[in-house]
Structure formats: structure tokens, C-alpha cells
Length: 117
Image 1 (cartoon, rainbow, N blue to C red):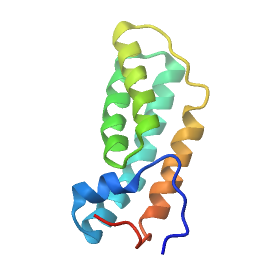
Image 2 (cartoon, rainbow, N blue to C red):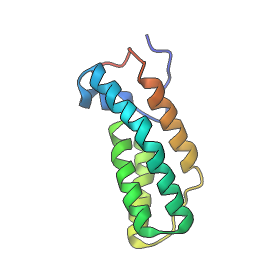
Image 3 (tube, helix red, strand yellow):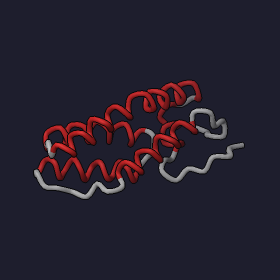
Image 4 (cartoon, rainbow, N blue to C red):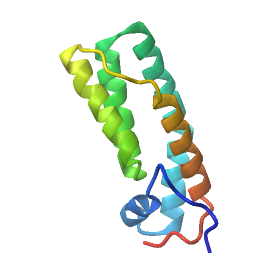
């Protein structure tokens, strides 16, 4: 039985795609090892106002967050990508907190045997 409550992700999205717990865990661990560096690159691009890099990194990270069922973060990244293409600023005030919450929940989901396909 799961004791984890998910607010930022829906782990069943990835489980449906993975099909089994071993693949689910492998994909979750890939997210937890690769997404933080990609987010760091996005944050740096935002700091520099580098629209091309913002678009590129938000697009790549959006793909990863969509797979782990992080709908709210994925929507924010989509908005960033579109704003970057139009070279217009967009609000990012809580993006780091949302990413941290997603990362924590994906990390917790790796050992959650209650997640069913």
C-alpha cells in the first residue's frame, strides 16, 4: 500500500507507458538523473534571456515531464517554449519550486509498489 500522496505528478501515466515495474523504475531513475541538469540549463538560459536556449531546454524538459505525468509543470514548460519562440518574457516565479516537487515525487514513486499499470 502506498503512503505517498502525489500532487505534482500522476505516476500511473508513466506506468501505463512502461508496462511493468522494472521499466517504470528505470525510466523514473533516468528522469531523476537527467532532468536536474536540463532544468539547470533552462534556469541559466532564463537568467541570460537566451530565447533559443529557453525554447530548446523547455521543449526537451517538457517531453520528460509529460512522460512522468507532471501535467502542471509540462503546461508551464509549454508556455515557456511558446514565449521563447515569440521572444516574449513569461512569468517563471515558482518554476523551480514546481520542478523540485516533481523531482521529489518521481524519486518517491520509484519505490512505490502500489502503482499499477
